[in-house]
Image (cartoon, rainbow, N blue to C red; front, side, top):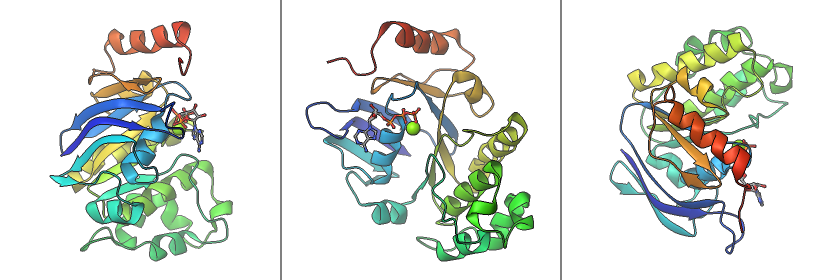
Amino acid sequence: MLHVRDLTAGYHHDNPVVRSVSFDLPTPGVHAIVGPNGAGKTTLLHTLAGHLHPTSGRVVLERRDITGLLPHHTAQAGVALAPQGRRLWPSLTVLDHLTITRPAHGAGFSVEDLLDLFPPLAARRRHHGHQLSGGEQQMLTIARALRTHPRLLLADEPTEGLSPRIAEQVTGILRDLPHRGVTVLATLPHTHAATALTDRVHILTAGHLSDPLDPHDRQADALLSDHLTLTPAHPE
Ligand SMILES: Nc1ncnc2c1ncn2[C@@H]1O[C@H](COP(=O)(O)OP(=O)(O)OP(=O)(O)O)[C@@H](O)[C@H]1O
Ligand SMILES: [Mg+2]
């Protein structure tokens, strides 16, 4: 479904952040990328979503080449980003967030579908972004992304800053999305968080991506801890 080949991207041509990354995501499914701070997880998702232009490589979603397309075109192709740090509009209500975002193509999740999927948001539908708890903000970030009716949801650190109980609630919703036709690619801080979400994790260290691993597999943790203790974030 998603095929990424030799993708290189970053902020300076001579020092890329994402380095020749290749992977395939079977559909439908839930997949995770785990890596230390600064490894390039956000940069990779932003490149897939079209917020950052790759230096080289290819991104193919359901046989369509979406390499280097702008965000509104990747959205039309079926990609949605739930960004790290949520990026809600503080003065808009929950309902405003969900009504000004429209399906990019065809019928998708209606506002009522999304309020059913996230009951805490239904109870807060007239609250403004800045009046929501961290968990409610995260749910709204995901709901807003789903409103575009994506085939692929890129969820950047969806459990960051949440209590274990709320993190489990959000994880449960993400785990269920493939049954609704949405494939999920989430970034997470450690393999333990990934075990709650999926049995397929890639480890990203200094812009290099591993083959898929079982997050229960000690090899995944070993890759991470080797990197944390031995390698600087961006070797020259
Ligand atoms: N807008 C930017 N301009 C220049 N450099 C950036 C920019 N955004 C990120 N970087 C750099 O790119 C590298 C990777 O950052 P990125 O945010 O992709 O990592 P991450 O894995 O998502 O980290 P975290 O776990 O903290 O979210 C870091 O060295 C960071 O300083
Ligand atoms: Mg990040």
